[in-house]
Length: 244
Picture 1 (cartoon, helix red, strand yellow):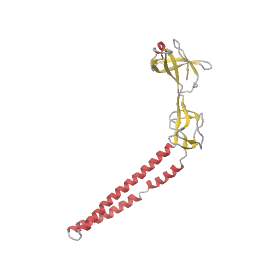
Picture 2: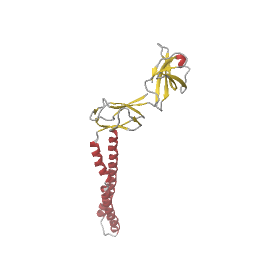
Picture 3: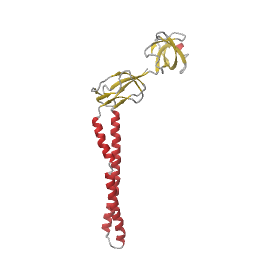
Picture 4: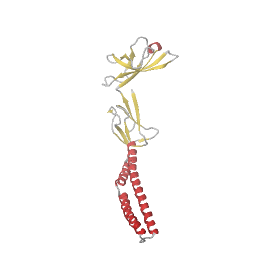
């Protein structure tokens, strides 16, 4: 069984639990959320800044005025109706307006990035399931403080495939190959034989017992088998008995 102890990314007070023990959940489904009211208000302020284009429009207007002034003075300088210092000052103001517009646009982009950053922080307060599976345990309740030392909020197990581990005699394990189909006996009521796929055959044999670890996978997409049911190896030779 694939098991995941789903933890919060940050410490904080748990605001709500969105599932209960026994619920079936899917990948990325929200399980719980830390309180994030302060971040929500900060996001609203950042969105106001990002939605406003007042600075850019003001900078564009200033640029138009200074450009017009500069372009009008240039021909007047050629006919002697404007002095050099006046034209140079107008040129400097025009170039400064260009820089101010660029700065206003950069600040506008920074405001949009700030919105994205705060949203990312809010997303970190939402605890999501990393796998499809079943919620088997809720570790906290709303109002509990979730610390970095104990960040686990829920346990989710994946039951669509059940893993069985045997310790077989090396001679028996040596006959197996990865992805090979074999039969095992579930000690259910009544006992039944099911097909399993070889997932792993250890390259190492335990020198004390003379056995080799073998992992099998049993398809359980229809949830017809219970996790934890004792299982027996039915192949030739003897092997250890383990559980799913």
